Image: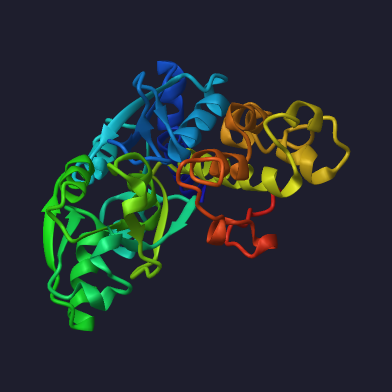
Length: 336
């Protein structure tokens, strides 16, 4: 019996050591390495000074603030659809925040763990207004620009076969090349996440008013972060960062008032901000790690509005990305 207990203890110790590996590496390195896209407006794209901005970038900044105390301690690695998962598998990056769709196969065959969804999307289509397209059946025989190695490429073929639409895919390995080709007039339509299409029209189209994103979507595209399997503590940190940002919105904790809110007598706010309990130390972090994370860029609603919402060039509605209390799907697991 004693040997069994010793073996069990060693197993638990081994798992704990393995699961803390990424967090320890980041603390020793002093920098978070975050995998992002090569350029999706609103999610992760470099500005004119080469600084990455967007919803996914703000998650990286919040994570660095919570772990290292400084949102600037992030190195961004721009990844394509083809190399994003291998970069995470190989350890080139610590976490993948690259508007990547979560699917059954990705969750069971890549050796990776899917974190909570931070943006609910759907595959859409954009066309020139003067083409006169009102619905997808009007695109029979059309040439459609699509990115290689994405769920969009597969879904495009599936939907076409199921609905008798014989569109002609034109496949690209980089989104910037795809945008250039579409806006240059070589394709009749372009398909991608509807949010990415809105960003492309707002930032890459020669004249945004000449284009329309069709209202119909043909898939569910739940976007969220990925981590490596076997890194339980690190994956939990990624998970609870998201829930913390959503919970902050639900409780009215913002970038501007988070310091003042640490004095709140509301139990839920006290737990979230580390004024009571030990929810930070259980993850190997300072108990007030979410205070630092929220100060870096605000709660989920603030991050959404600034990057893709009404305060951004994309001007997207909250829709499914609203909190559950307002008809959306964003719902934080209780911090207790």
